[in-house]
Length: 294
Image (tube, rainbow, N blue to C red; front, top):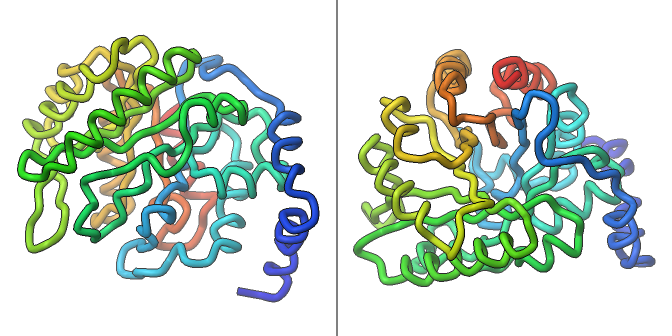
């Protein structure tokens, strides 16, 4: 990382040290937009992985370790035409607010980051990030929750209860509740998500029933085999997640392109694949994704 790049972001630390109230002022001054406009589609950049200790991209376990480099990549991605907004934790959202990068963007707060990657308690995924009131106070358009269901892990029920409460509280404030469901299990000490169509359908069925209303609930689903059948399992508006694919960019884009044609699918929420593309060209990767969404 160059000294020039580090210097470009040094003022964020200075503001945080000297004038912490600047964060709230920047949030209040942010130009907001409706959740949906125009074509009713959404292209969201995701940046909530670091808060769960998930810093790896592909074969690089610490790819997202530099906050300065991540912010630079995020600013590039958010500046591209057709990008609607950001999914992130409070620290990243606040950095970008101070940089003035979130005007006219949809901003979704990441709520539960307590299920640290690799931890024994990973599936007891506590809500350690935003709560619904925090999303409202910061002028965000919604909150997102990762809800992994593992029948052999008692931590699952705590996560489900917390997710249901978050759905209720977001709905009370008329904010989107974005659920990212997985049917999960432990294998060799690691949490693994079952990406078979049947498992994804079961996870959708369970998470669709969380909370006392589903009026503001959206799904964030992986692209798996037989997506046509998967999407028949819900009437919720759905965004596709990108994950950390093991296939080539061309293969990944082909699966997204096909799934985006399904009626209930309203767009993409993608982070690492676009922020850390194999060829290093963030702008080109984002533009390719936008062309598929729109």
